[in-house]
Each structure stands twice: as C-alpha cells, then as structure tokens.
Image 1 (cartoon, rainbow, N blue to C red):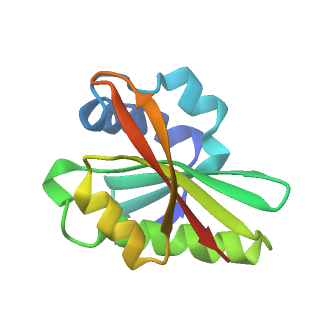
Image 2: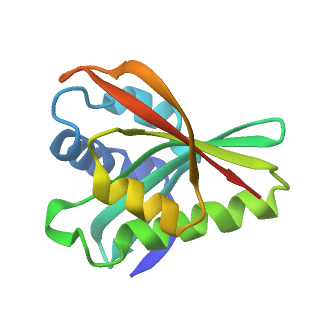
Length: 141
C-alpha cells in the first residue's frame, strides 16, 4: 500500500468510492475535481483502497472526509491515511486538527482516539440521511 497525493486522473475512482461509502449524500465528481489538491489516496497498485481529505485555514486543519473500500476495511488503510494526514498537518505547522464523526460510528471514534483525537463537543443533527448528531473531535498538534 502506498499513500500519495491525488491527481485529476483519480477523480472518477474517488467519485466511485465516495458513492459506495456515502450513498445517501456523496460528493459529486465536479466537487471532488475542484478540491483534488486536498485528497490523499491509499492505493495498492492501480486499486484505490481509500482516501482522506484535509482542508486548512490559517493554523487549523479539518479532516473533511475519510473513506475506505468496504473490502479493505479493518486492514490498516484508515490508520495509514490518518497517520499521513497528521504528519502533513505537523509539517504545515498546524496547531490543531478537527473532525466530525457520526455519534453512532464507534469504530471510527475509536480509531480517532487511538491517533490522539479527543471529543470536545457535539453538533446536534449535523448529519442527514439519517439525521444524527456529530461528535466534534480535536487533536492538538
């Protein structure tokens, strides 16, 4: 598995994985293309295993999205992506990383906590389809 920056050639594969992982509200391909410079990919040769999206404002970062192919979950892909996001955030001199996660997504919350994120709040009814609260988590870098 390798972690690399995404390019315009990856948009279709990212959009296909997005539709599988988030069928109720996937990011459209044109939105992915506009923000392709924020995407990190985990790949095994030509196979897209997963991706992470990092945005930054001043000295703060936000993990906008992370997704792993259903066939490759629980194999370390998300952890590898998260480790690389954190490494890059530190290299950029960011002070904090934020993320939101569905309150019911225990495995994701556990993964984030394993990487040093701590819950700091809750966003009521943040998610739709189905409507659900988000847990706001922060990592101080």
